[in-house]
Length: 110
Length: 120
Image 1 (spheres, helix red, strand yellow):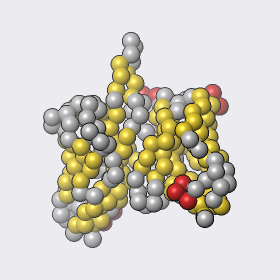
Image 2: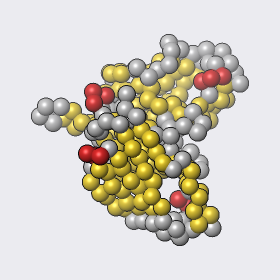
Image 3: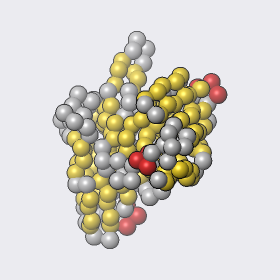
């Protein structure tokens, strides 16, 4: 099946800093979603972005489907941005089944 | 209504007991999914429903796990004779499905808060 690799695995920032999280995938995709799992365990949708660029406030994402990667940008980070960020994709015949990466654990210190 | 809801939010049970986990999807979402998330990992697919039909159960780990969605809305994931290795977060998601000229496509999956299961 498709492989999803996220980097870095861990990231520690001071409040106000910017960061870039990366997601590489091994095959062409029909769907790519970014999620934020907050410290209470809720899995929150950030972007549905199989290709192109989207922005939502301080967050933006870019997927370059032909090169099989996606980037999540967080600007002016806040302590509430802490948590695990997951990239998930689906492809091929099982294009309803999301395959998740292992996530990036982000800690934003005040 | 609001988002996907799941109950119970926490479940502690003894090894050998059966448990039933409930999922209420977003109104109007025909597609429903179950995932399992171990500590420190991303969610892993268990099963998928289109309306009331279970289209894919390839991710269910063994025959102690079953799921149903009899009326095409609420779904129940049942684990029989629970074992300690079943301890995990069980997440439900739902989505719309759209039909193109040649194929179907699945829209954004929205996840519920999960049920954290602990088997003692």
